[in-house]
Image (cartoon, rainbow over all chains, first blue to last red):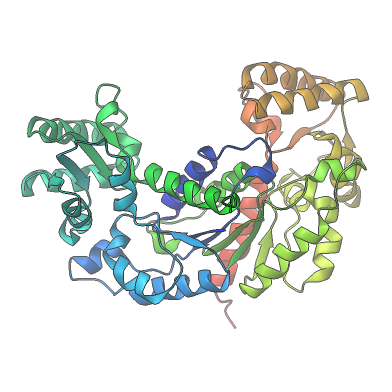
Amino acid sequence: MLGVLGGMGPVATIDFMDKVVRNTPAERDQDHIPMVIRLATDIPDRTAAILGDGEDPLPAMRRALHELETDRVSVIAIPCNTAHFWYDELQAETSIPILHIAEAVADTLPVGTDCVGVLATTGTVKAGIYQKTMAKRGIHCIFPSDDEQAEVMRAIQLVKAGNGRSARKLLTHQADELLRAGCDAIIMACTEIPIALADAALAPKLIDPTEALAKAAVRVCLAERTPLAA
Amino acid sequence: MLGVLGGMGPVATIDFMDKVVRNTPAERDQDHIPMVIRLATDIPDRTAAILGDGEDPLPAMRRALHELETDRVSVIAIPCNTAHFWYDELQAETSIPILHIAEAVADTLPVGTDCVGVLATTGTVKAGIYQKTMAKRGIHCIFPSDDEQAEVMRAIQLVKAGNGRSARKLLTHQADELLRAGCDAIIMACTEIPIALADAALAPKLIDPTEALAKAAVRVCLAERTPLAA
């Protein structure tokens, strides 16, 4: 059974569930993967904590994690890029495997990928979430410059405020810049970004971490269902 | 905290969560309603059981209900019209209030409503889920004839198979017939129906029970948050 440590934010959790359901081969309700989803909306803001001026979200994340243990889930997913700053602390708390969103993304990259561009919150960038995972695989990460990163944050705020059109223009420009700088693919490492950056020309180069995490969860849960031959 | 007895089917549960989130006044993640959602995909088919040729889904629903009790939720919603056939048995099992989808719909009807048309699965129709609730309020329910009900079922199957366009034609015709027969509003009492029946001319007369249930859940959960003045 899949456990979801969700609520960061609620819309991203729903988007993740939708992607799990759409990626599950199913003809009837009973073919779907059983899940327990905890929408733990009491978890303080992650980016604020990473940037040093917010309450520590780890205690509330730990509480939700232990509740998922009580629920006897067999694998856990956290559909929030920034929350993976605390991945090691959370995994150290439990023997239940927690899927890592950046590992799930790395698993989807074609062989021969040398360099990825990352569009994310400043929290995710500063936390080094993608840098650490990609470095282990010999993949280099590139980011917008500080000034351009401020534009990425502005675009994320525009999406949250419902102004996807203006956000799209800003994000398309940033994505073009990263491609010009030589990356093979662009990771849309904030749940607001794919909502705005649906660009036909860029699409083959864009990677949605929520989709990658959903596919990884489906793979693990379907493998549980099929007993291995002796 | 809202508990969701879900998975009947998974897409309907996700639609319900989305409607809860969209109906919650919130500016930040922390303003949202905390939820535990159990996607209990082991619950056997409800319509098959009502029509007398399927496994009893009540034991699996009871298990999920008791797990929500362990989760210490304060109110429970079941985003599936047909599952309400077992509402009384489920409510008798627990002291936690379970919202009733037909009561939530009835609460949204304008004063003076005399007659509602119901488009639903044959299971929901035979189970009398809407008839019982509306009768208590002096509201009469009308349904398609047996032949026309078979067309409604065909439309629901078409939506499940991804053919919304053909389903829309069938459902618009059935809705028009019910309005011609004198109903004041039409209840789209199966989660597949609102997906196909988005018709601008009919819209003011259409009621979506998932939306009504979501609004009822938000109302109860927000009232929990605001302590009453002494």
